[in-house]
Image (cartoon, rainbow, N blue to C red; front, side, top):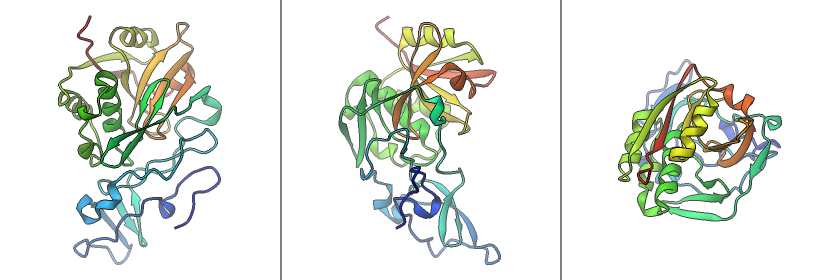
Length: 261
């Protein structure tokens, strides 16, 4: 298996967790050698387990979610390739003001290893498009401080996660999801929501379209945003300009209702 390049980028040909050969029933167009399939985790169960062979990332060497058994992929010239591009750098190096290091690891079960950081538990998404599931799991852990509150079997088998699914994952932990909408540049409103009900799941569209992250804090002067990103599996601080680049005119914010207020 080939190694990642010096930037830490992993190309489809060098995925650290190899996907199985296509099942015999998969129809491949002989003129293009392309097939499309949602790969079943039952084909090769070991492929859907998180294996901690990579250290906590640095800005110079990021880690990327591997293709998993639940990813929707093209089969091209003998390789599985995700329908979503892989090896994307979410925020450029010059946009990252601070990286919050790991303070230790947490075994969530089902082979999933998370990291403790100053911002909270960081979970790397378990498939190339499973950011929403990881974000929901982080919020649930924030609220319950209990690994038992997570369905880790579900966490490692989810592919695309809609906003409705995120709210469902929160509800299944006996918590109350709270959904509100803010405008493109309304950081003050988002900061007020976080102060009232805690960290928030926000969907951004810079670099990765429809990517769910956790926003933990916004500075009082609204210049910096602290966030947990499930794509690279780290906690970082970015300037407000970079953060707002990914906002739409209307943005749904998902939190867990603070029932103590």
